[in-house]
Length: 63
Image 1 (tube, rainbow, N blue to C red):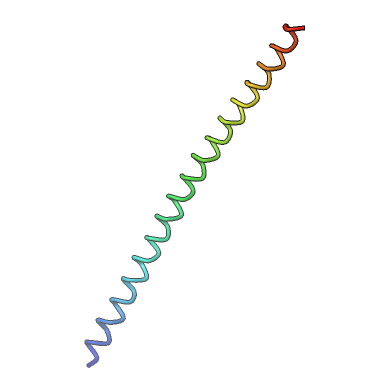
Image 2 (cartoon, rainbow, N blue to C red; image 1 turned 135 degrees about the vertical axis):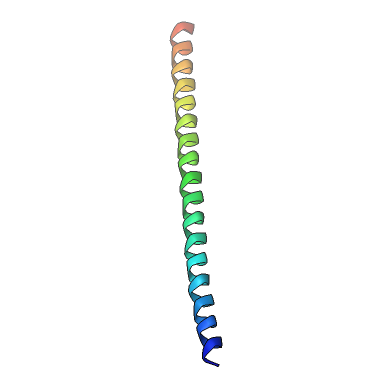
């Protein structure tokens, strides 16, 4: 009986470690994903500014 309880407590400890590792992996994945998304947003912002500058340049030269 006592051995069974020890085995269960060890299994619970091991499961806690696995859960923490899984949570850390998810956090790492999400942080990398958000960094990539912010890079993409910055790139899109640069393109929109470039397009706005191009439109302003063209409108100046059309007059």
